[in-house]
Image (cartoon, rainbow, N blue to C red; front, side):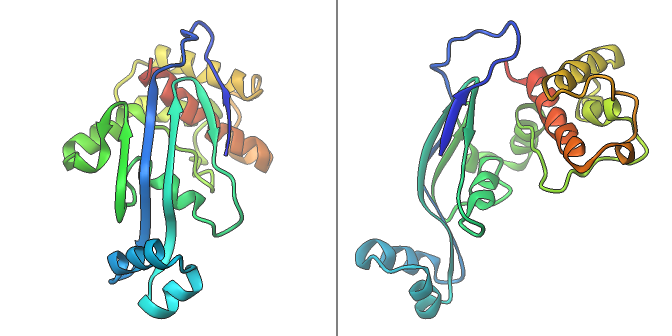
Length: 203
């Protein structure tokens, strides 16, 4: 894992607040997940034996970490090691088999669907592995779209979008369509979209 501070201009540089906290998170896919976890803990068996004995796949094994406000926190590993699976627990796109996830002091697993939708809409930005940009919208409008669907005024969302595009070095491309950008530039538009949503919501 890798971490470093990241702050928007004018933000408080006090970084003691924990915004994401994961404790003992396990995700085991299969009907005998609980038995598989017990065997891993008691016997120290690995993924191949878990699959053979229990017909289960270990996605995440006993992950614990904290992320502070203003911090860049990277989860690194080999292909298939469970990085995306772990990240999807933060906004509960995947339910943990065991363990807990807190976001802004709230136990994500305990939220009902309404509270979970509110949390996702107002406090979480996500960059997709495939950029998922809207081809008929400009770069600026793609970045500002999460704010648009929340009813943020056009002048505000354009200002936030332009600032986010500046952070990813895409100033001058605001009015271009995604097809006019390289693949790497499109990825940066996706990052800017997540940053714009984050900047507007978490202070």
